[in-house]
Amino acid sequence: MKRRPITYSKNIFIPVTNVCRNKCAYCGFRRPAEHKDAFLMTEDEVISILKRGAEAGCTEAMFAFGESPQDNPEFEKRFGKQLKEAGFENTIEYTAHLCRLALDCGLLPHVNGGVLSFDELQMLAPLNASMGLMLETTANVPAHKDCPGKVPAARLEMIENAGQLGMPFTTGILIGIGETRNDWIQSLLEIQKLHDKYGHIQEIILQNYTPNSGQANPIFDLRPPSKEDMVDLIVLTKNTLTPDISIQVAPNLMSPLELIQYGVTDLGGISPVTIDYINPESAWPEIEGLTNLLNSKGYEFKERLPVHPQFVKKGRYGSETKELIEKLADADGYRKI
Ligand SMILES: O=c1nc2n(C[C@H](O)[C@H](O)[C@H](O)CO)c3cc(O)ccc3cc-2c(=O)[nH]1
Ligand SMILES: C[C@H]1O[C@@H](n2cnc3c(N)ncnc32)[C@H](O)[C@@H]1O
Ligand code: SF4
Image 1: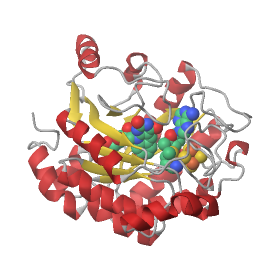
Image 2: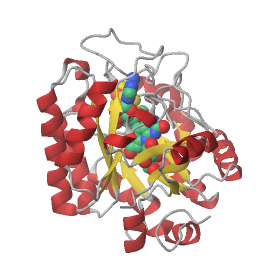
Image 3: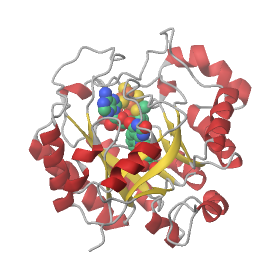
């Protein structure tokens, strides 16, 4: 029997702001608003990355950034003026504008800005090919101390809201953060439950916690998963979720060659242009080399859009992305070559 292809999306990563209301112990991306390296990207900075992405043939602009930065008065003090002068009340309004710029440059937005309210989701949904939020885990782990946005119920609620809005959605679980194996199963079951209700989950990311030098918080209860842990998780996922949900691992965090045979179907966003701002020391593999390697092992490696083929074929994505998706997709819903 012919295997289904392994897919990926050629993307750019736009980290709109690294200020965040949460303090995840594993995160090396966040900076306190008063820190010298805290930033809110300017429109010109974003445009410059968008242009480089378009030139390199990317189709996805992934906006991943700190959650509700304006909850922090220091953020308002330092960046409020920059936002207001650009004409925006808050980061989400600004992100909507950046999504429009991405579409103008020929790139399809995928926003993951942490927990968003229903109204915020509703504002961004038409401008996105798909959206995302990692569930992380259904467990209350110490690594999520002082993280209002990592309360499992808040995350599940947003994933449910995205389902009500009909958005193709990426979620996932992060392992090695103090959870148990039973928590993996509970997390998978909650994700499947929402998918049974709304049919909107396009992929589940199985992310292995990876230490990096940016971590500002004291590290407790964190353990980088072994290859064996990831294999167990992949097999569990394959046996728990319906097969219409892609199983994604990040090829810069663990060698995909040793994992794909267990049921991985997707390698997520790979960028020829930007680094992975979440794990900056973990370089992206080069796409051509990875393609040859996978082909030599008998796998087809196929480029998709940030919205998975079955949703492309159903016309299910943000209304304002329709024209570009129709231009970029082939008859099977993959990227046209
Ligand atoms: O480069 C990254 N891409 C991440 N992506 C993007 C992902 O790799 C792809 O862009 C999606 O498959 C959409 O095509 C995420 C997307 C989400 O919706 C939620 C979480 C992530 C996490 C990461 C990440 O840590 N690094
Ligand atoms: C964007 C996503 O990146 C994940 N994330 C955050 N920090 C790390 C890390 N050190 N290693 C692996 N994944 C991480 C979280 O799951 C978040 O939701
Ligand atoms: S992982 Fe996301 S939510 Fe957690 S501190 Fe980092 S930026 Fe904030």
